[in-house]
Every structure is written in structure tokens, then in C-alpha cells.
Length: 148
Length: 148
DNA sequence: TTAACTGCAAACTATTTGCACGGCG
DNA sequence: CGCCGTGCAAATAGTTTGCAGTTAA
Image 1 (cartoon, chains in turn brown, blue, yellow, orange):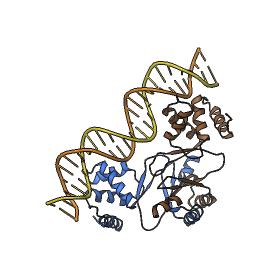
Image 2 (tube, protein in one colour):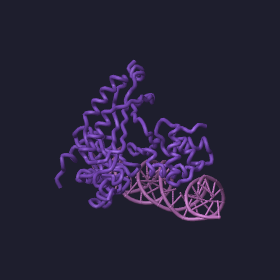
Image 3 (spheres, helix red, strand yellow):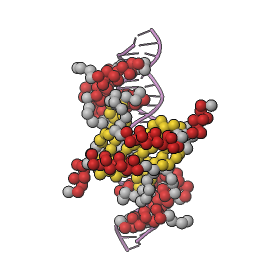
Image 4 (cartoon, helix red, strand yellow):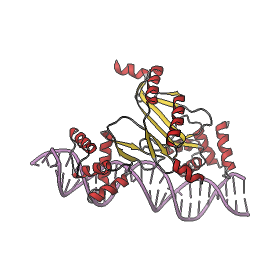
């Protein structure tokens, strides 16, 4: 099984921070890295469990927390539904637009926000450190489905 | 107690849809309308309870669900924390920049966001309905305090 | 009058924690 | 070998549901 560079990056980060590279953590990271879409803890657990049946749900939660603390995954939760997770690509900061009907998420990047942040900093004197931006609405498929 | 036009609007919408205007629902709507910030169900319950001690948490949940279905409130959950609710204003939309040291909040409006929303809508096909934008950082006073 | 609404308690779902055992470094 | 990490079960947090009594229209 070839390790993707994405996985290597995560393993390296874990080791660098002094965390052990256990079989379980490898399995969780592999499940995340081979998924193209966001996964809920339960979905992730199902995939991990298929590869390594002895890994518990608790470990999935603990590993997610760890990866989140190390900023290796991206967590978003929509409309109070279960949060979903995705391995963070080394690339830059992005935002989401979320469908409130089906939960489908599209990513986008915008430098308008960075500009706004700079403008705001100079106007208010704040040192701007981070921001949350999330759009929600109805995706094309659901619009079609609902109107028909 | 003077009813704000915001409350009137909600009451009217409820009646229009055939729902009863109970004392409990009035209290929940009043608590929402007199709050400037987003409230979690628990926070909302605390405020409602202060005005009308016999209103139960369950009713708060049920009323929130109802108001959400009628699109009278806006629900947002960030980072898997409890969802928060805010009465939808027919008019202006604004955003916040929050100081992570002292909690001080500055409001601002931006048409850059509206433009971004329109651009996003045309690019993704989504019907954009709402968005969250919140900056956080350090306010001028705290910056001075910390650096000294 | 009467169907909708409410409070309570209990059920349910998602997540976290305590503890003894097991395995990575 | 020592200690971090794990699985299990139990605890917790947030939300929903069943039911009998109450109330707005």
C-alpha cells in the first residue's frame, strides 16, 4: 500500500510533535486521505472499521481531536448536523458554501476577504488574527428537486 | 412593554400560518428580539426563563424549530459548537470583529461580501441564502496592554 | 368547544471520560 | 521498560418524543 504524500505529511507532523504512530492512527489517516468527500465521525469509523475491525469509535474521535489540534484536518458543521472532516491540503485557506438541504459543500478561495481584513485592521486598529466565513443556501440539484 | 416591529412581524407570520400565539412563544420571540447577539438554545432558555419562569426548555427548542421552518430566524453553528440563533432582520446585515482578549465587538458592514455572494452564486449555481462572517483578533486597547 | 400547545420525564444521539491493559519508541 | 494510547463501558451533553393536562381561537 503506497503512502500518499498527504499521509506522509500527517505522519511526519505527528512524529514531530512526539505522538506515537500507532496502527490505529495510521488507519484513520489512511481512511481520511483516501476519501474525496467530508466524513462524519461515524462514516469515518465505518471506513476505518472495514480496514481494521478492532479499531474503536472512541479512537476515531480521539484521533480527530488530535489532528484538529495539529491543524491537519478541517472541521465544519452544518445546521447543527454532525460535523464533517477533511484532510487539510497543504494549500492555502479556503471557505465553504453549504447546501442546507443536502449538506453538499463547495470550497472556494477569495482574496477579497484578505483585502477586507487588511482594510478593517487599518480602520479599527484591531490586529486581525483569523476569521470565519461560510455561505449557505441551496445547491443546483436541490433547487431543481424542490421546484419540480 | 412595547412590541418592536420585529416582534410584530414574527407574530403576524405565525398567525398567518395558523399557529397559535401563546404566551410561551411570545416570550421566546421577545427574548430573541431584544438580543443583539446570537444565542444558543440554552442561553435563550435562560433569558426566557428570567421573564417567564414556567416556560420549559423543550418549548424553546420547539419554538426555535418552528421559527426556523418559517425562516424567521437564522441558525448558525461554528466549529461543532452549539448552534446559535438570531432573529432575521428584514433590513441591514452586518458583521462582527471580536477581540479574543476582552471580548469587545465592533460591527461593520461590507458590500464586498454581497458582491462575493453574487459572484459565488453565478459560479456554483447555488442559491445563496445567508452567510456568516466573523473576524477575530486583538483590539487596540488589548494590543497596547499586552505589548507594554 | 376542540385541536393545538405545553411541561414533565424518559428516550435518544453524539461525544467524552475513567480505568486497566497493551504496544510503540 | 516506561508511558502513551487503546478498548470497553459508563457518564455526559444536547435534543427529541410520548403523554396527559391546558389554552388560544
